[in-house]
Amino acid sequence: MDAMRYNLLKRPEDPHRMVRFRERLQDIPWANNESPGALDQLFRAVDELAEAEVYYYHRRRNTRAWISGVARTIALATGSIGLLIPLLAGAGLAWPAGPFRAELGYVFLAISAGALTANTLFGGTAGHVRFVTTQLKLEKLITASRIGWYDYLSNPGAADEASRRGFTLILDYATKLHDMVLAETGDWAGLTLAALEQFQKDAQNKGAGKTPP
Image (cartoon, rainbow, N blue to C red; front, side, top):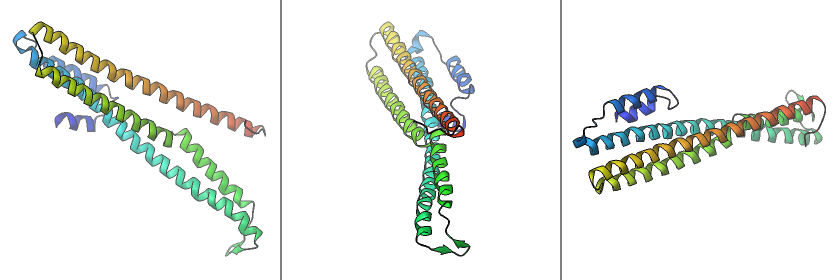
């Protein structure tokens, strides 16, 4: 419960989590007769780092889902209004302030396009999908690693062999965890930079009066 509370309150990218990890390692007894328990504590310390990443991506996916929902709602509402105004103006209808002006429809269409652009730039929809996918991958890794660890605990083998197997399992868990997070971070950075570059190109083309390809 203490680990869960720590993970919920601390951002997983906060360097303090590595300080806590070091403190956990310092508290582990490494006497020969306590090796099985020490390895189990080491596994739990690595497992806590993995849980922190799951909480992180869960929090980020909720934020991106909110951005996506707001941006798409604005785009749908203003886009629909932008399409309706020219039709209403053509039909000769008016509202209390006066007749509908067809050119006003372009304003609402521009707002709709801006909302969709903001969704892309801030990674609303794309970010939500990526963070959900990464969270599920991390949960799969955690589940498989925990099952593998308890399989090891059920039959560790001879003392020397048990220590080697235990360290190998834990190191493999930690390596896969960080490789997964590094790969996702790199992919997400590439996607964000690509969206920003495309936005800058579109802005330059519009400023020069060009139509983007």
